[in-house]
Structures are given as C-alpha cells and as structure tokens.
Length: 181
Image (cartoon, rainbow, N blue to C red; front, side, top):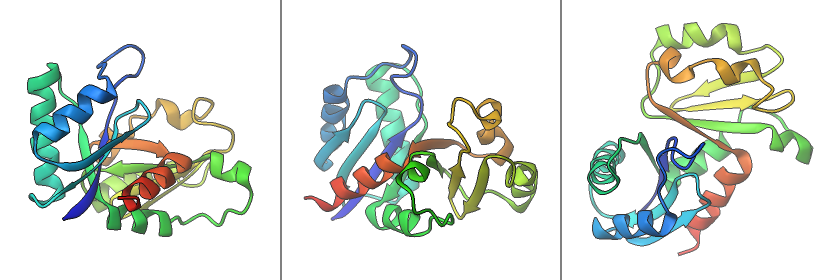
C-alpha cells in the first residue's frame, strides 16, 4: 500500500468550484482508497492505494470530480516518498521562521522542457527567487505572494504543464499527515 497526496488546483477559491471536504473525502472513499484524510479547504487529500501510478490516479480522481461535482479540476499526485524528497530538495538555505513563511512549492504535473525552463529564467533571480527541480518549483517571495509581480504571471502556461502551489507549512503538514497512519 502506497501513501499518496492529491493536490487539487483552484477549489474553494473566491467562491468558485466549491467542494466540502467531507464530500471530497467520501468521493475518494468511493474509489476504494484507504485511510483518506483531508487537510484545510484548499484541496489536499492524503490517502493510500495499491492502484496505478500518480498520473493514472490523477486521471481517475479528476474524472470522478467531474462526475460528482460537475466541473474540471487539475489533480496532481505525489507519493509520500516524492513529497518527502521535495521537502529535502528545498534549494534555499533558510534559517529564520519568517523566511519559511515566504516559501512556496509549486507541484507540476510534468517535468518542464528545457525550452520552458528557459522562459522561466527572467523570473529566477529578481526580488522573488524561483528554482525548478524536477517536477517541483520552489518560490521564495521577497514580501508575500499577493505583493509579488509573479502573482500575475501564468506560470502553468509558461511551463507548459498544470501546477498547483502550497506554502511550506502546508507541504510539511501534508508529509506529517502522510506519515501518521
């Protein structure tokens, strides 16, 4: 049995694509996933399964969301092992608690091409710092997400793959939840 984390993009934001976490949990259970747990309202689900790969699970979950709730949602899956590797792979040398509050990890559905990474270069070392490692993009904001010029950049289109971001605290909480079965 493998522990997975499903990261749903854009639910319960601004009154759009509303899904109650209990309903989402029930939907996951209907797919015969085990030990289903949700974390906060932004679409984080930890579960266990013996079925398929991350891409296969994302497709099944996305289809079930469409059938159950009536809209499309990008679903990105990481195994607990992959999530732990993303935490260990943080490229920024941070020591102060305040710095970690400004650190976000964007999870990419696919690894970006060299051409896509080249398009990202102008954003790497401005006031906000961006680093891509495999299927994760780490962003250290100078002030905050909402005050960043990156907030207006459609990074998913730039990178050519669906993405969804989580703050550092949420990433670590999801890993802890995944370890606590």
